[in-house]
Amino acid sequence: MQTILKTIIVDDEASARRTLRQRLQSAGGCSVVAEASTGNEALNLIRGHQPELVFLDIQMPGMDGFDVLRALPRRHLPEF
Image (tube, rainbow, N blue to C red; front, side, top):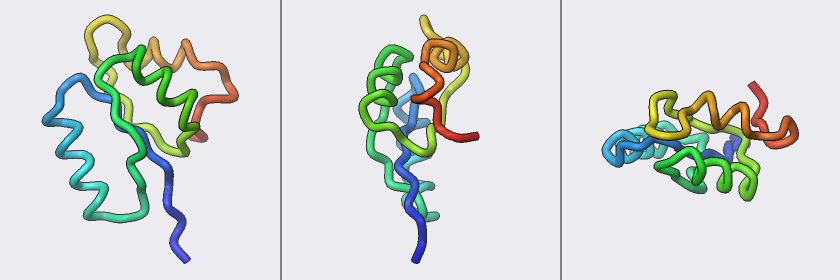
């Protein structure tokens, strides 16, 4: 049985989120449970969904990907 990873995509560009979602659907193994376009939105979704995998854009206006990682409590960080 294949493990399905609960996944969140974070990117300020809608086209990048769409492309990544399509590639993940084609590859299988991931279930995209949410998408975020801002760092604050990502924080809320990660806390709420507790995903195993997060595709996190580093360069975003306002709160970037590194800021998101610093703001998350350790218990909410997906495994590396």
